[in-house]
Each structure stands twice: as structure tokens, then as C-alpha cells.
Length: 169
Image 1 (spheres, rainbow, N blue to C red):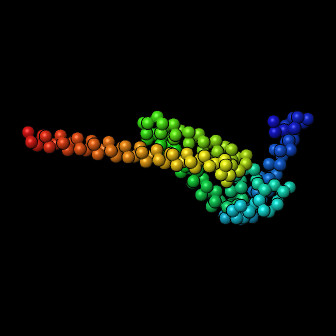
Image 2 (image 1 turned 60 degrees about the vertical axis):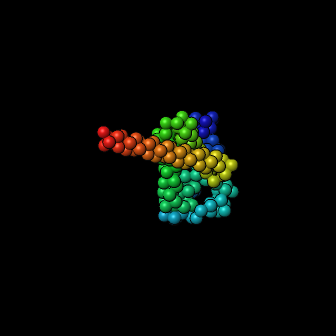
């Protein structure tokens, strides 16, 4: 579907070709300053390719604008978000909290995939839900930890009571 119908496999359609041109341009910008990039949100004001304001790939955009350091920080953030969802999914026995954890993992996975084809990360209308559900995931982890601490305290009290009974016998 990305190639023109007239010459099978020989030519990209206009939309796919424009994305390739944008990505190549952003990579050329990255090569000028690979460590720190050109600066956050600068690509849109450079007017580099046919007046487009975006690279149509968030990872390429991050690399061009913030360099290797920025991309590394972004990947660490994504890893921590994913790990938080996995932690809730695997730590709790409550089906509601497991669903919240799994839903967050699915949401983050779809966001990761969508960002290959545009900028879905910096628009609050699009990724605002991600942050709201992240708050739910963190609350779920807190509830799960509180329940585990309560169970541990009850177990210790039961063991202490059993030791006192043995000592009095």
C-alpha cells in the first residue's frame, strides 16, 4: 500500500515518500549535533522540508532535537512506565487492579507503536489518558503494598500470639 500501483514496488506513494524525506532530513539534522541535538521543539520552526512542522516519527524527532542524551532519557522513561504497569499486573491478585495494569501495558504499547508514524506523545488530548491511567496504576501499587503489609503484620501477630501460648503452657 506504500508503493504506487503503476510500477509495482519501484516507487513509493507520495505520503510514504514525504515521510522518508522528513526522516532523512531529521537524521541529517541529528548528525550536525548528535549528543544534544538542535534543541527541544526546534524542528517545527526550522521550515526544513516543504513547510512540515513535524518529522512524522516521534523517535526521530527526539533524536534530532535532543540527541542521543534525550533519546536515552526518553527510552528510560518508557521503560519505567512499562515496568510500573508490569509490577501492578504481576503483584496483585485483585482482578480489577490486574486489569488496570494490563490495560496500561496495552495503552503504552499502542502509544509506542503509534509514535513511529507521528507525534502522539506531546498532545494532551491524545496521551492525557496515559497519565491518568498511570495515576491509577500507581494507586493500585500503593493499595497492593498496603494490603501486603497488613497481611504480614497479621501473620507476625498470629505467630507472636502462638509463641506466647506455648510459653505459658
